[in-house]
Length: 296
Image (tube, rainbow, N blue to C red; front, side, top):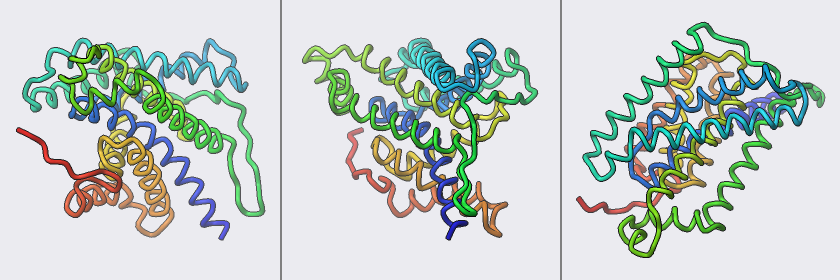
């Protein structure tokens, strides 16, 4: 039983990180109907922002860790808005293929720019929060796992409150439903879309810090696989659906952890993408998504 609980906690910790990244994918898709493949590399930049802030801000303190977390979120939010302004804004309303190719180009730009500025050698992420292990018999829970789960849960609740309890959230939902009608009633679409990119990128930045807490080796290509799995999580839960992205991330992280602890551990990445294929075949809208007819 304790082994099952240990695997479950590990899975929820990993799934919470996938959920934070998946929320960025699903928010941009919900508003603009395209996948921002550069999002996974914003996650990587968040880890490196935390790495360099750790050299300035005192480590191993709660307030220092929170300052590093908020600094990474702010830096990634600004990066996300900059990407939207320079790379995507002029392509709005154009062919979807153009936006897709641009997104891949931005992702490659961030990855190889990271190798130029940060270096290709993996770096050890600092211990930004105080760390300790709590033993309950044979069950061992690290403080970093607790921090990951609690912070991710708080950020998801905050996102729900922003989307459903604020004016900017109402504007986001209006633009998602009908951009032209939203503009006619006074919504500034540019501001709303820029805010959406910033908010999603801030969550990716938080995910980068939380990921580095549990897997403290970072490099410029570290976002590729977590980003792809977070995309799978977004599709699993229902792309464009915020609770669905959170659910998909938690489910995928849990499944991956249990597979990793079994005789099939070498296939854990393949199983994640097998889930994507199965979902697309049997429930293309995802677990919480709704089937819609799109006009072309």
